[in-house]
Length: 524
Image: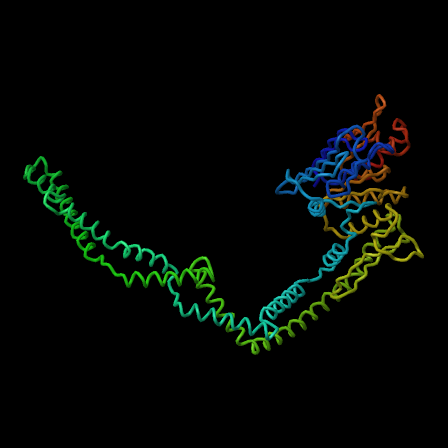
Protein backbone atom coordinates (compact mmCIF):
# COMPACT_ATOMS: atom_id res chain seq x y z
CA UNK A 1 0.00 0.00 0.00
CA UNK A 2 0.95 3.65 -0.40
CA UNK A 3 1.56 4.56 3.22
CA UNK A 4 2.81 8.12 2.81
CA UNK A 5 2.73 10.80 0.12
CA UNK A 6 4.71 14.03 0.14
CA UNK A 7 4.33 16.74 -2.51
CA UNK A 8 6.25 20.02 -2.83
CA UNK A 9 5.74 22.85 -5.36
CA UNK A 10 3.42 20.93 -7.67
CA UNK A 11 0.84 23.26 -9.21
CA UNK A 12 -0.96 25.11 -6.41
CA UNK A 13 0.47 22.71 -3.83
CA UNK A 14 3.32 24.38 -1.94
CA UNK A 15 3.87 21.55 0.52
CA UNK A 16 1.64 18.61 1.32
CA UNK A 17 2.19 15.54 3.44
CA UNK A 18 -0.37 12.78 3.72
CA UNK A 19 -0.33 9.53 5.69
CA UNK A 20 -2.66 7.05 4.03
CA UNK A 21 -4.57 4.12 5.52
CA UNK A 22 -5.51 0.70 4.10
CA UNK A 23 -8.90 0.17 2.50
CA UNK A 24 -10.79 2.86 0.62
CA UNK A 25 -9.78 6.51 0.90
CA UNK A 26 -11.97 9.28 -0.55
CA UNK A 27 -10.32 12.49 -1.75
CA UNK A 28 -12.76 15.40 -1.90
CA UNK A 29 -12.72 19.19 -2.03
CA UNK A 30 -13.99 22.23 -3.86
CA UNK A 31 -13.50 22.47 -7.61
CA UNK A 32 -10.04 23.88 -8.31
CA UNK A 33 -8.72 23.05 -4.85
CA UNK A 34 -6.15 20.64 -6.28
CA UNK A 35 -7.72 17.18 -5.91
CA UNK A 36 -6.46 16.09 -9.31
CA UNK A 37 -2.94 17.16 -8.34
CA UNK A 38 -2.93 14.35 -5.79
CA UNK A 39 -3.57 11.95 -8.67
CA UNK A 40 -0.95 13.74 -10.79
CA UNK A 41 1.57 13.28 -7.98
CA UNK A 42 0.89 9.54 -7.80
CA UNK A 43 1.07 9.29 -11.58
CA UNK A 44 4.51 10.95 -11.52
CA UNK A 45 5.65 8.35 -8.98
CA UNK A 46 4.86 5.51 -11.38
CA UNK A 47 6.50 7.02 -14.45
CA UNK A 48 3.92 9.52 -15.69
CA UNK A 49 4.95 12.29 -18.08
CA UNK A 50 6.60 15.26 -16.34
CA UNK A 51 6.21 18.79 -17.67
CA UNK A 52 7.82 22.04 -16.55
CA UNK A 53 4.35 23.62 -16.36
CA UNK A 54 3.62 21.39 -13.36
CA UNK A 55 6.13 23.32 -11.22
CA UNK A 56 4.62 25.92 -8.89
CA UNK A 57 5.32 29.46 -10.18
CA UNK A 58 8.45 30.87 -8.56
CA UNK A 59 9.81 27.47 -7.53
CA UNK A 60 12.89 25.81 -9.03
CA UNK A 61 11.46 22.29 -9.00
CA UNK A 62 8.56 20.13 -7.92
CA UNK A 63 9.23 17.08 -5.76
CA UNK A 64 6.97 14.08 -5.18
CA UNK A 65 7.84 11.28 -2.76
CA UNK A 66 5.91 8.13 -1.97
CA UNK A 67 6.54 5.41 0.60
CA UNK A 68 5.10 2.01 -0.30
CA UNK A 69 4.65 -0.68 2.35
CA UNK A 70 5.19 -4.04 0.64
CA UNK A 71 4.74 -6.21 3.72
CA UNK A 72 8.24 -7.52 4.27
CA UNK A 73 9.95 -4.33 3.09
CA UNK A 74 9.42 -0.72 2.07
CA UNK A 75 10.00 1.01 -1.25
CA UNK A 76 10.55 4.77 -1.41
CA UNK A 77 10.11 6.47 -4.78
CA UNK A 78 11.07 10.09 -5.46
CA UNK A 79 10.44 12.15 -8.60
CA UNK A 80 11.93 15.58 -9.17
CA UNK A 81 10.51 17.83 -11.91
CA UNK A 82 12.66 20.94 -12.53
CA UNK A 83 11.32 24.15 -14.01
CA UNK A 84 14.07 23.76 -16.60
CA UNK A 85 15.62 20.51 -17.74
CA UNK A 86 14.70 16.85 -17.51
CA UNK A 87 13.02 15.17 -14.58
CA UNK A 88 14.89 12.77 -12.29
CA UNK A 89 13.69 9.62 -10.57
CA UNK A 90 14.98 7.74 -7.54
CA UNK A 91 14.04 4.30 -6.21
CA UNK A 92 15.16 3.64 -2.63
CA UNK A 93 17.64 6.50 -2.94
CA UNK A 94 19.26 5.30 -6.18
CA UNK A 95 18.91 7.06 -9.50
CA UNK A 96 16.53 5.29 -11.87
CA UNK A 97 15.44 5.73 -15.46
CA UNK A 98 11.82 6.53 -16.26
CA UNK A 99 11.55 3.09 -17.85
CA UNK A 100 12.69 1.48 -14.59
CA UNK A 101 10.28 3.69 -12.65
CA UNK A 102 7.40 2.64 -14.92
CA UNK A 103 8.31 -1.03 -14.52
CA UNK A 104 8.34 -0.79 -10.72
CA UNK A 105 5.25 1.42 -10.68
CA UNK A 106 3.26 -1.02 -12.81
CA UNK A 107 3.49 -3.53 -9.99
CA UNK A 108 2.45 -0.98 -7.36
CA UNK A 109 -0.29 1.27 -8.72
CA UNK A 110 -3.11 1.21 -11.26
CA UNK A 111 -4.78 4.51 -12.18
CA UNK A 112 -8.30 4.39 -13.61
CA UNK A 113 -9.69 7.37 -15.48
CA UNK A 114 -8.02 9.51 -18.13
CA UNK A 115 -4.57 8.12 -17.40
CA UNK A 116 -2.00 6.08 -19.31
CA UNK A 117 -0.95 3.93 -16.35
CA UNK A 118 -3.79 1.41 -16.40
CA UNK A 119 -2.47 -2.11 -16.57
CA UNK A 120 -5.83 -3.53 -17.68
CA UNK A 121 -5.53 -1.56 -20.92
CA UNK A 122 -2.54 -3.64 -22.01
CA UNK A 123 -2.99 -6.80 -24.04
CA UNK A 124 -0.59 -8.81 -21.89
CA UNK A 125 -2.44 -8.03 -18.64
CA UNK A 126 -5.81 -8.72 -20.27
CA UNK A 127 -4.54 -12.13 -21.36
CA UNK A 128 -3.16 -12.86 -17.89
CA UNK A 129 -6.44 -11.75 -16.31
CA UNK A 130 -8.45 -14.09 -18.55
CA UNK A 131 -6.09 -16.96 -17.72
CA UNK A 132 -6.50 -16.39 -13.98
CA UNK A 133 -10.27 -16.03 -14.26
CA UNK A 134 -10.60 -19.22 -16.31
CA UNK A 135 -7.90 -21.13 -14.37
CA UNK A 136 -6.17 -21.78 -17.70
CA UNK A 137 -3.31 -24.25 -17.22
CA UNK A 138 -0.31 -22.85 -19.09
CA UNK A 139 2.14 -25.45 -17.79
CA UNK A 140 1.95 -27.90 -20.73
CA UNK A 141 2.22 -25.03 -23.24
CA UNK A 142 5.24 -23.60 -21.44
CA UNK A 143 6.92 -27.01 -21.31
CA UNK A 144 6.19 -27.69 -24.99
CA UNK A 145 7.68 -24.34 -26.03
CA UNK A 146 10.79 -24.98 -23.97
CA UNK A 147 11.18 -28.41 -25.56
CA UNK A 148 10.91 -26.99 -29.09
CA UNK A 149 13.37 -24.20 -28.27
CA UNK A 150 15.87 -26.66 -26.79
CA UNK A 151 15.70 -28.90 -29.86
CA UNK A 152 16.04 -25.85 -32.12
CA UNK A 153 19.24 -24.93 -30.32
CA UNK A 154 20.58 -28.51 -30.48
CA UNK A 155 19.88 -28.75 -34.21
CA UNK A 156 21.57 -25.41 -34.84
CA UNK A 157 24.57 -26.40 -32.70
CA UNK A 158 24.88 -29.73 -34.54
CA UNK A 159 25.91 -27.91 -37.68
CA UNK A 160 23.58 -27.69 -40.61
CA UNK A 161 25.95 -26.67 -43.44
CA UNK A 162 28.09 -29.67 -44.58
CA UNK A 163 31.07 -27.45 -45.45
CA UNK A 164 30.99 -25.71 -42.07
CA UNK A 165 30.68 -29.08 -40.39
CA UNK A 166 33.66 -30.50 -42.33
CA UNK A 167 35.82 -27.53 -41.41
CA UNK A 168 34.89 -27.85 -37.74
CA UNK A 169 35.61 -31.61 -37.81
CA UNK A 170 39.09 -31.01 -39.31
CA UNK A 171 39.94 -28.39 -36.70
CA UNK A 172 38.62 -30.44 -33.78
CA UNK A 173 40.37 -33.59 -34.98
CA UNK A 174 43.73 -31.77 -35.11
CA UNK A 175 43.19 -30.26 -31.67
CA UNK A 176 42.03 -33.49 -30.04
CA UNK A 177 44.95 -35.44 -31.54
CA UNK A 178 47.38 -32.81 -30.27
CA UNK A 179 45.91 -32.99 -26.78
CA UNK A 180 45.79 -36.78 -26.68
CA UNK A 181 49.41 -36.93 -27.81
CA UNK A 182 50.33 -34.63 -24.93
CA UNK A 183 49.12 -37.34 -22.51
CA UNK A 184 47.72 -34.94 -19.97
CA UNK A 185 46.67 -36.65 -16.75
CA UNK A 186 47.91 -34.62 -13.80
CA UNK A 187 46.57 -31.02 -13.49
CA UNK A 188 49.52 -30.29 -11.15
CA UNK A 189 52.16 -31.63 -13.56
CA UNK A 190 53.62 -28.24 -14.47
CA UNK A 191 54.04 -27.19 -10.84
CA UNK A 192 55.68 -30.52 -10.03
CA UNK A 193 58.08 -30.17 -12.98
CA UNK A 194 58.90 -26.59 -12.01
CA UNK A 195 60.02 -27.72 -8.55
CA UNK A 196 62.11 -30.57 -10.01
CA UNK A 197 63.76 -28.26 -12.55
CA UNK A 198 64.65 -25.79 -9.84
CA UNK A 199 66.40 -28.58 -7.91
CA UNK A 200 68.30 -29.93 -10.94
CA UNK A 201 69.37 -26.49 -12.09
CA UNK A 202 71.17 -25.91 -8.80
CA UNK A 203 72.18 -29.47 -7.89
CA UNK A 204 75.69 -28.43 -6.85
CA UNK A 205 74.38 -25.71 -4.62
CA UNK A 206 71.94 -28.09 -2.98
CA UNK A 207 74.72 -30.64 -2.32
CA UNK A 208 76.98 -27.99 -0.87
CA UNK A 209 74.21 -26.70 1.38
CA UNK A 210 73.43 -30.21 2.65
CA UNK A 211 77.15 -30.92 3.22
CA UNK A 212 77.59 -27.66 5.14
CA UNK A 213 74.60 -28.51 7.29
CA UNK A 214 76.00 -31.99 7.94
CA UNK A 215 79.35 -30.53 8.90
CA UNK A 216 77.75 -28.09 11.33
CA UNK A 217 75.84 -30.94 12.93
CA UNK A 218 78.38 -33.77 13.15
CA UNK A 219 81.93 -32.51 12.54
CA UNK A 220 84.40 -32.12 15.37
CA UNK A 221 83.26 -29.21 17.47
CA UNK A 222 79.81 -29.32 15.84
CA UNK A 223 76.42 -29.32 17.46
CA UNK A 224 76.53 -33.04 18.33
CA UNK A 225 79.91 -32.66 20.03
CA UNK A 226 78.69 -29.63 21.97
CA UNK A 227 75.70 -31.51 23.33
CA UNK A 228 77.98 -34.44 24.26
CA UNK A 229 80.29 -32.10 26.19
CA UNK A 230 77.28 -30.61 28.02
CA UNK A 231 76.14 -34.09 29.06
CA UNK A 232 79.64 -35.00 30.23
CA UNK A 233 79.79 -31.86 32.34
CA UNK A 234 76.53 -32.64 34.10
CA UNK A 235 77.48 -36.24 34.76
CA UNK A 236 74.86 -38.25 36.63
CA UNK A 237 73.98 -35.63 39.22
CA UNK A 238 70.34 -36.14 40.22
CA UNK A 239 69.65 -32.43 40.50
CA UNK A 240 70.23 -32.08 36.74
CA UNK A 241 68.12 -35.10 35.76
CA UNK A 242 65.46 -33.08 33.86
CA UNK A 243 68.12 -31.13 31.97
CA UNK A 244 70.08 -34.28 31.20
CA UNK A 245 66.92 -35.93 29.82
CA UNK A 246 66.24 -33.01 27.49
CA UNK A 247 69.87 -32.93 26.30
CA UNK A 248 69.71 -36.63 25.44
CA UNK A 249 66.54 -35.96 23.40
CA UNK A 250 68.38 -33.18 21.58
CA UNK A 251 71.32 -35.49 20.97
CA UNK A 252 69.02 -38.13 19.43
CA UNK A 253 67.34 -35.49 17.24
CA UNK A 254 70.74 -34.20 16.08
CA UNK A 255 71.76 -37.74 15.10
CA UNK A 256 68.56 -38.06 13.02
CA UNK A 257 69.18 -34.69 11.39
CA UNK A 258 72.74 -35.65 10.53
CA UNK A 259 71.60 -38.86 8.83
CA UNK A 260 68.91 -36.97 6.88
CA UNK A 261 71.37 -34.27 5.76
CA UNK A 262 73.81 -36.98 4.60
CA UNK A 263 71.02 -38.78 2.66
CA UNK A 264 69.85 -35.52 1.05
CA UNK A 265 73.36 -34.65 -0.06
CA UNK A 266 73.82 -38.11 -1.61
CA UNK A 267 70.44 -38.00 -3.43
CA UNK A 268 71.00 -34.69 -5.24
CA UNK A 269 72.74 -35.43 -8.50
CA UNK A 270 73.27 -33.36 -11.63
CA UNK A 271 71.23 -34.66 -14.59
CA UNK A 272 71.47 -32.29 -17.60
CA UNK A 273 69.44 -34.63 -19.81
CA UNK A 274 66.57 -34.78 -17.34
CA UNK A 275 66.70 -31.01 -16.89
CA UNK A 276 66.48 -30.51 -20.67
CA UNK A 277 63.59 -32.97 -20.92
CA UNK A 278 61.71 -31.10 -18.21
CA UNK A 279 62.25 -27.82 -20.06
CA UNK A 280 60.89 -29.31 -23.29
CA UNK A 281 57.84 -30.73 -21.48
CA UNK A 282 57.08 -27.44 -19.77
CA UNK A 283 57.23 -25.64 -23.14
CA UNK A 284 54.65 -28.10 -24.47
CA UNK A 285 52.40 -27.47 -21.48
CA UNK A 286 52.83 -23.70 -21.83
CA UNK A 287 51.87 -23.88 -25.50
CA UNK A 288 48.76 -25.92 -24.66
CA UNK A 289 47.72 -23.40 -22.01
CA UNK A 290 48.17 -20.58 -24.50
CA UNK A 291 45.85 -22.33 -26.95
CA UNK A 292 43.23 -23.98 -24.77
CA UNK A 293 43.03 -22.53 -21.28
CA UNK A 294 44.70 -20.61 -18.49
CA UNK A 295 45.45 -23.74 -16.44
CA UNK A 296 45.97 -27.44 -17.11
CA UNK A 297 42.58 -28.04 -15.49
CA UNK A 298 41.04 -25.86 -18.22
CA UNK A 299 43.07 -27.58 -20.95
CA UNK A 300 42.00 -31.07 -19.82
CA UNK A 301 38.35 -29.94 -19.65
CA UNK A 302 38.62 -28.44 -23.15
CA UNK A 303 40.11 -31.70 -24.47
CA UNK A 304 37.17 -33.71 -23.11
CA UNK A 305 34.59 -31.24 -24.48
CA UNK A 306 36.28 -31.14 -27.88
CA UNK A 307 36.40 -34.93 -28.06
CA UNK A 308 32.69 -35.09 -27.24
CA UNK A 309 31.86 -32.46 -29.87
CA UNK A 310 33.99 -34.26 -32.45
CA UNK A 311 32.19 -37.54 -31.80
CA UNK A 312 28.88 -35.71 -32.15
CA UNK A 313 29.84 -34.15 -35.48
CA UNK A 314 31.27 -37.39 -36.85
CA UNK A 315 27.98 -39.08 -36.00
CA UNK A 316 26.04 -36.15 -37.47
CA UNK A 317 23.76 -37.97 -39.85
CA UNK A 318 22.54 -40.46 -37.30
CA UNK A 319 22.13 -37.81 -34.60
CA UNK A 320 20.49 -35.35 -37.01
CA UNK A 321 17.95 -37.96 -37.99
CA UNK A 322 17.12 -38.64 -34.34
CA UNK A 323 16.86 -34.91 -33.58
CA UNK A 324 14.58 -34.36 -36.57
CA UNK A 325 12.28 -37.09 -35.30
CA UNK A 326 12.26 -35.60 -31.80
CA UNK A 327 11.66 -32.13 -33.26
CA UNK A 328 8.64 -33.33 -35.23
CA UNK A 329 7.20 -34.88 -32.06
CA UNK A 330 7.84 -31.69 -30.08
CA UNK A 331 6.08 -29.57 -32.72
CA UNK A 332 3.08 -31.88 -32.59
CA UNK A 333 3.04 -31.63 -28.78
CA UNK A 334 3.29 -27.84 -29.03
CA UNK A 335 0.39 -27.66 -31.46
CA UNK A 336 -1.70 -29.83 -29.15
CA UNK A 337 -0.85 -27.63 -26.14
CA UNK A 338 -1.66 -24.46 -28.11
CA UNK A 339 -5.04 -25.83 -29.13
CA UNK A 340 -5.81 -26.76 -25.52
CA UNK A 341 -4.94 -23.27 -24.25
CA UNK A 342 -6.83 -21.58 -27.08
CA UNK A 343 -9.87 -23.73 -26.29
CA UNK A 344 -9.65 -22.94 -22.56
CA UNK A 345 -9.32 -19.20 -23.22
CA UNK A 346 -12.19 -19.21 -25.69
CA UNK A 347 -14.36 -21.04 -23.16
CA UNK A 348 -13.49 -18.61 -20.34
CA UNK A 349 -13.96 -15.43 -22.41
CA UNK A 350 -17.81 -15.37 -22.50
CA UNK A 351 -18.00 -16.17 -18.79
CA UNK A 352 -15.65 -13.29 -17.93
CA UNK A 353 -17.59 -10.90 -20.15
CA UNK A 354 -20.90 -11.94 -18.59
CA UNK A 355 -19.52 -11.58 -15.05
CA UNK A 356 -18.36 -8.03 -15.76
CA UNK A 357 -21.57 -7.04 -17.57
CA UNK A 358 -23.61 -8.16 -14.56
CA UNK A 359 -22.08 -5.28 -12.56
CA UNK A 360 -22.54 -2.60 -15.22
CA UNK A 361 -26.24 -1.70 -14.61
CA UNK A 362 -25.50 -0.74 -10.99
CA UNK A 363 -22.71 1.52 -12.24
CA UNK A 364 -24.94 3.62 -14.56
CA UNK A 365 -23.94 1.54 -17.57
CA UNK A 366 -27.18 -0.38 -18.00
CA UNK A 367 -26.95 -0.60 -21.78
CA UNK A 368 -23.21 -1.11 -21.95
CA UNK A 369 -21.59 -4.22 -23.36
CA UNK A 370 -18.22 -5.78 -22.67
CA UNK A 371 -16.92 -8.75 -24.56
CA UNK A 372 -13.64 -10.63 -24.42
CA UNK A 373 -12.27 -11.51 -27.85
CA UNK A 374 -9.78 -14.35 -28.23
CA UNK A 375 -7.79 -14.96 -31.41
CA UNK A 376 -4.36 -15.85 -32.68
CA UNK A 377 -2.12 -18.81 -32.05
CA UNK A 378 -2.90 -20.45 -28.68
CA UNK A 379 -5.50 -17.72 -28.21
CA UNK A 380 -2.64 -15.35 -27.46
CA UNK A 381 -4.44 -12.23 -28.72
CA UNK A 382 -6.93 -11.31 -25.98
CA UNK A 383 -8.84 -8.03 -26.16
CA UNK A 384 -11.41 -6.56 -23.76
CA UNK A 385 -13.86 -4.67 -25.99
CA UNK A 386 -16.44 -2.21 -24.70
CA UNK A 387 -19.42 -0.21 -25.92
CA UNK A 388 -21.12 2.17 -23.49
CA UNK A 389 -24.35 2.65 -25.44
CA UNK A 390 -26.60 0.68 -27.82
CA UNK A 391 -25.72 1.05 -31.48
CA UNK A 392 -22.07 1.73 -30.75
CA UNK A 393 -19.41 -0.61 -32.07
CA UNK A 394 -17.35 -2.54 -29.57
CA UNK A 395 -13.87 -1.09 -29.29
CA UNK A 396 -10.76 -1.68 -27.26
CA UNK A 397 -10.91 -0.29 -23.73
CA UNK A 398 -7.99 1.99 -24.53
CA UNK A 399 -10.16 3.71 -27.17
CA UNK A 400 -12.99 4.62 -24.77
CA UNK A 401 -13.21 8.42 -24.91
CA UNK A 402 -15.17 9.08 -21.72
CA UNK A 403 -13.01 8.99 -18.62
CA UNK A 404 -16.05 8.35 -16.41
CA UNK A 405 -17.32 5.45 -18.50
CA UNK A 406 -13.85 3.95 -18.70
CA UNK A 407 -13.34 4.27 -14.93
CA UNK A 408 -16.66 2.55 -14.20
CA UNK A 409 -15.92 -0.20 -16.72
CA UNK A 410 -12.59 -0.71 -14.96
CA UNK A 411 -14.41 -0.76 -11.63
CA UNK A 412 -16.64 -3.57 -12.90
CA UNK A 413 -13.58 -5.46 -14.12
CA UNK A 414 -11.87 -5.05 -10.76
CA UNK A 415 -14.95 -6.45 -9.01
CA UNK A 416 -14.51 -9.63 -11.04
CA UNK A 417 -10.72 -9.74 -11.35
CA UNK A 418 -9.38 -9.67 -7.82
CA UNK A 419 -5.70 -9.73 -8.86
CA UNK A 420 -3.71 -6.63 -9.71
CA UNK A 421 -1.44 -4.01 -8.14
CA UNK A 422 -1.98 -3.33 -4.43
CA UNK A 423 -2.93 0.33 -4.99
CA UNK A 424 -5.90 1.24 -7.22
CA UNK A 425 -6.63 4.90 -7.96
CA UNK A 426 -9.98 5.95 -9.46
CA UNK A 427 -10.52 9.38 -11.00
CA UNK A 428 -13.75 10.51 -12.69
CA UNK A 429 -15.44 7.25 -11.70
CA UNK A 430 -18.54 9.24 -10.67
CA UNK A 431 -18.65 11.54 -13.69
CA UNK A 432 -22.21 11.98 -14.97
CA UNK A 433 -23.93 9.82 -12.35
CA UNK A 434 -25.80 10.33 -9.10
CA UNK A 435 -28.40 8.78 -6.84
CA UNK A 436 -28.54 5.00 -6.71
CA UNK A 437 -25.73 4.64 -9.27
CA UNK A 438 -23.43 6.73 -7.08
CA UNK A 439 -24.26 4.58 -4.06
CA UNK A 440 -23.51 1.45 -6.12
CA UNK A 441 -20.17 2.91 -7.21
CA UNK A 442 -19.27 3.69 -3.60
CA UNK A 443 -20.30 0.23 -2.45
CA UNK A 444 -18.25 -1.36 -5.24
CA UNK A 445 -15.17 0.68 -4.40
CA UNK A 446 -15.50 -0.27 -0.74
CA UNK A 447 -15.76 -3.94 -1.72
CA UNK A 448 -12.55 -3.69 -3.74
CA UNK A 449 -10.96 -1.89 -0.78
CA UNK A 450 -11.14 -5.09 1.27
CA UNK A 451 -8.40 -6.58 -0.91
CA UNK A 452 -6.62 -3.48 -2.21
CA UNK A 453 -5.85 0.04 -1.14
CA UNK A 454 -8.31 2.20 -3.09
CA UNK A 455 -7.96 5.96 -3.59
CA UNK A 456 -10.91 7.69 -5.27
CA UNK A 457 -11.25 11.33 -6.23
CA UNK A 458 -14.95 12.09 -6.04
CA UNK A 459 -17.41 14.98 -5.91
CA UNK A 460 -20.31 12.81 -4.75
CA UNK A 461 -21.12 12.32 -1.08
CA UNK A 462 -22.82 9.03 -1.95
CA UNK A 463 -19.41 7.70 -3.04
CA UNK A 464 -17.28 9.34 -0.34
CA UNK A 465 -19.50 8.04 2.47
CA UNK A 466 -18.34 4.48 1.77
CA UNK A 467 -14.68 5.28 2.37
CA UNK A 468 -12.71 3.93 5.31
CA UNK A 469 -10.74 7.19 5.35
CA UNK A 470 -11.68 10.62 4.05
CA UNK A 471 -9.25 13.41 3.15
CA UNK A 472 -10.26 16.92 2.14
CA UNK A 473 -8.26 19.11 -0.21
CA UNK A 474 -8.76 22.82 0.38
CA UNK A 475 -7.54 25.95 -1.38
CA UNK A 476 -6.29 28.91 0.65
CA UNK A 477 -5.77 32.36 -0.89
CA UNK A 478 -3.62 34.82 1.05
CA UNK A 479 -1.89 37.96 -0.26
CA UNK A 480 -2.45 37.02 -3.89
CA UNK A 481 -0.93 33.59 -3.27
CA UNK A 482 -2.88 30.37 -3.63
CA UNK A 483 -1.88 27.26 -1.74
CA UNK A 484 -3.48 23.87 -1.22
CA UNK A 485 -3.88 22.07 2.08
CA UNK A 486 -5.00 18.52 2.76
CA UNK A 487 -6.29 16.95 5.95
CA UNK A 488 -7.99 13.77 7.10
CA UNK A 489 -11.49 14.41 8.45
CA UNK A 490 -13.43 12.31 10.94
CA UNK A 491 -16.63 12.49 12.97
CA UNK A 492 -18.39 15.88 12.68
CA UNK A 493 -15.75 17.29 10.35
CA UNK A 494 -16.56 14.50 7.92
CA UNK A 495 -20.27 15.16 8.29
CA UNK A 496 -19.58 18.82 7.47
CA UNK A 497 -17.67 17.90 4.31
CA UNK A 498 -20.36 15.48 3.13
CA UNK A 499 -23.02 18.14 3.81
CA UNK A 500 -21.06 20.61 1.69
CA UNK A 501 -20.86 18.06 -1.11
CA UNK A 502 -24.62 17.43 -0.89
CA UNK A 503 -25.90 21.00 -0.77
CA UNK A 504 -23.05 23.46 -0.91
CA UNK A 505 -24.07 24.66 2.58
CA UNK A 506 -22.30 22.59 5.20
CA UNK A 507 -24.20 24.29 8.01
CA UNK A 508 -27.57 23.11 6.65
CA UNK A 509 -29.22 20.83 9.20
CA UNK A 510 -31.02 18.96 6.42
CA UNK A 511 -27.78 18.35 4.55
CA UNK A 512 -26.01 17.27 7.73
CA UNK A 513 -28.82 14.85 8.54
CA UNK A 514 -28.57 13.42 5.02
CA UNK A 515 -24.79 13.10 5.44
CA UNK A 516 -25.21 11.14 8.67
CA UNK A 517 -27.75 8.87 6.97
CA UNK A 518 -25.27 8.16 4.17
CA UNK A 519 -22.56 7.27 6.69
CA UNK A 520 -24.91 5.07 8.69
CA UNK A 521 -26.09 3.31 5.53
CA UNK A 522 -22.51 2.63 4.42
CA UNK A 523 -21.67 1.06 7.80
CA UNK A 524 -24.50 -1.48 7.58
